[in-house]
Image 1 (spheres, rainbow, N blue to C red):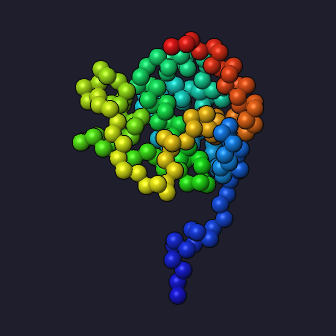
Image 2: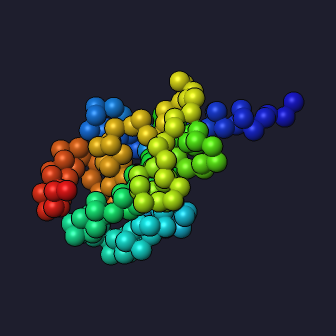
Length: 180
C-alpha cells in the first residue's frame, strides 16, 4: 500500500528555531532570508517601497519612516497586515492562520487588509470589520500579542532573538517616534 501524502507530512520533522517570545509563549519559527519577504509578495503595496529600502539597506526602518507609517491610516493598516503575514509565514508551530475575511457583504479584506477599508473613514468602501464565525481550534494571527508579532518580524529580518535586547531596541525606536 502506498503511503498517502498526508502521512508523509505528519511524519516529517519540523525544522526551525525555538523562540521565547515577550509574552512568555514559545514558538518554533523558521529562519528566512529578509529578501524572501520581497520575493513572496507578502509586503502590502502601501509599504513595498519603504520595506524594499529597509531590507536592501540591512538597517531597518529609520524613526522618520515609522512616523510616516504611524500618521497614515492606510500604511498603518498595511503594517499590521505585514506583521500578520510574516507571522503566518515564519511560525511553524503552533500553526498560525490569517484572520478570516470580514463578514460584511462583498468585503474581501481581513481586519487590517483591503487598502484601509476598515480604518480609513475617507475610503468610499469604509465599514467596520465584522468578525465571522471562527474555529476555536485555530490560532489566528490577529489574536497574537502585538509585541510577539513585532518580535517575530524583527527576528525574521535579521534582528535579535533576545527578548530583553528587543525590548531595549523597541523602547529606543519608539522614543524617537513623535506621539500621535
